[in-house]
Image 1 (cartoon, protein in one colour):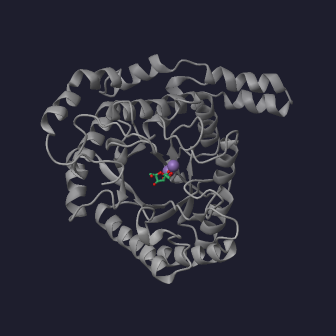
Image 2 (cartoon, helix red, strand yellow):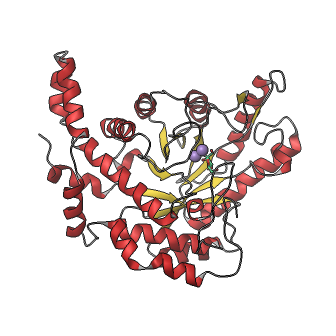
Image 3 (cartoon, protein in one colour):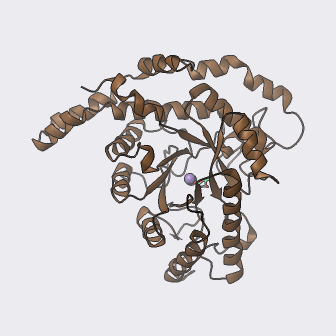
Length: 388
Ligand code: PSV
Ligand code: MN
Ligand code: MN
């Protein structure tokens, strides 16, 4: 039997990165419902993110999205974040909102559009130098809507050249992380639609290029934990974008739609050594909160990942291996399900208290009055949306 005490040290190193854009007003393609006190600046987004770390102790870094998070002094922004007890994490590039990219960015046949997209990534690397960020995460909206619209092969070749130019500019401690998504906004063919395409590109680039797996970016029914296993096996799982989905890229709270899937994913992470800091897997949230309060939505998400990682760590691996070796189908399944059905919340509550954190971060944050305070303080200006 695996005890909570034996796995607690591994939990201490589980860090979940929060996205700056989760604190702005955001949603799907329909109505975006604003909330009072929504940040107006990147500094206010970071202040809100720092609350998540303050109450959970498990969210020490904030990811930026460029150009959504504009600053004229990123070194100063880093010092400001550190003053609030958090660091600046992954820099997410954005080449999916400018007119110039109507027919593609890093894959574009038009040299001017492609140049602009490459230069944007080089600017992101300069920002990373100032923020101390390790990862440049690239997600591309590039693709086509109609068969024949584009030369599919040309776009792969162009992408490879663009990525190579960006990769060559990375510092020794920096990484390129390439995210895939099976469809949307392109509907016929997406240029990086699956883990295999992402893997092919990052494998060609080198050791400091890896794949980002966004849990919302797969067709219904996809066995995501299999992909996790394979990428860890190949040493190419660089990052997660966690969220949950019912239908498409819903960006809902991780673990809300299918807690069992999150458990299965995290079990493969544990099994593949992905929780070891040396594995270099970044655990990031990529969510938006349209009808729920944003900071509690993020706290809930961090706790969901922490609770499910705890259950995954509790799997009795020796008993599982023995059952698997004996082809004891139901026995092996029972070992896994025993851990999944374990209520780890009381153990986690005492563990948090032993580390000077609130036993119930959701309740402690609600009692703090922070939401009421920002609603009173942040009047005037323009509230941040799913953009600036
Ligand atoms: C795209 O759907 C995505 O998952 C990418 O990670 C973006 O950076 C993020 O959403 C925000 O639009
Ligand atoms: Mn994502
Ligand atoms: Mn997405």
